[in-house]
Image (cartoon, rainbow, N blue to C red; front, side, top):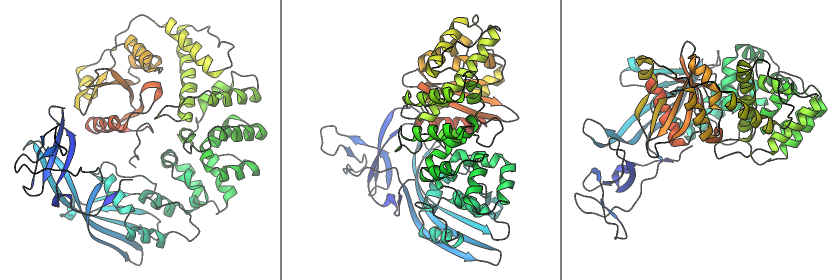
Length: 515
């Protein structure tokens, strides 16, 4: 959450470091309050204060921070017979590049929002007001989703959530027994008001984006929840889709970040003693990293949840043997900056199952090697698959497909379709990922692999997996060692998807999904 600064920045001097949108080169800009202009700075490398206004030569010292600058107009709560409404208005002070004038412009725009909770239905709505009511925008937040296509909605929600009037609004609506660490988010409030039973589950579980995405997809689970009593035991069993022992329940409430892991363990191990041993052992690996098992929350309510792990389990002679190797896989993990241990482990297991399928397509009599160290099994299959790979095959695209999928004018990234199975194998080798195993599906147009090339280094840095199932969807975005994209690359990807009409359906991009 970015800091809210309650002042108009255009009433004082400041400087910013940016990039020229047309030429792509770095540029230093200054805002001079005396001249009331934003201009390219005069830079004197030998001076103590290097940057000056080109119009009046005044030295500009203060550097503008990337915060949210607002001037509050009002914030009020209104009570009606059937609803309670939080209403706010504020000026948002922005810098925007005007392509027509080819220069930066200062903007101070009035934004007004209402958040209304219907007492009868339990639904909560977000209304963005326009000067003409005909163009008002309305979103139902009751399932925890946000209208991310609304311009600047992220910054505006940050403002709302830090408004003391909104905090009072939430306090009036939530029962006294609710305990939420810190300030409540708008979409979390809406979800809790629609399904108050969730308040008895650990906050870490309900606040997970992956939990909310899975919850929105499963109407069956929502209908079950609405009928459940306010009892912790019943709710934790509902969440896990299985009954667990009292000591397991006590342990996951003590260490709520383990709930994502427990989802997987109840699928993999029927023996509760083995399950508990795995749970406690993995918690001791790195108990301070609260998001270490977060990736296991993806698709928790789907029927095929954990299917790759279950398939791999069949390779072992017993639950006990598999449990030992499962724990060993975590201990061998070397997570990178954007990759948690659970993401690394999931990626390894999914790669094994995918490579096994691809090898069977080439060599139908293939039998899994008797290797029980999971990482070594992964490496063995990778080597074998590269050796068995078929002849060079070009992935052909129509002009329409190229126009839809490729782009070279977005930020610092080029978006290019993979040309052949050999290119996918080479990219996989460079990035240490198994994108080569996707070649057959790419050839058959079951999916599209879009390669991201850095405009600076002219090297492939990331791979996107895009599918078309009624709508175009981004389902994976991976970098080196299956790492997630940096914030800069994520912004380019979001811009690319918005332009191409592609819906983001992956936790690799850190945003909320649209309902």
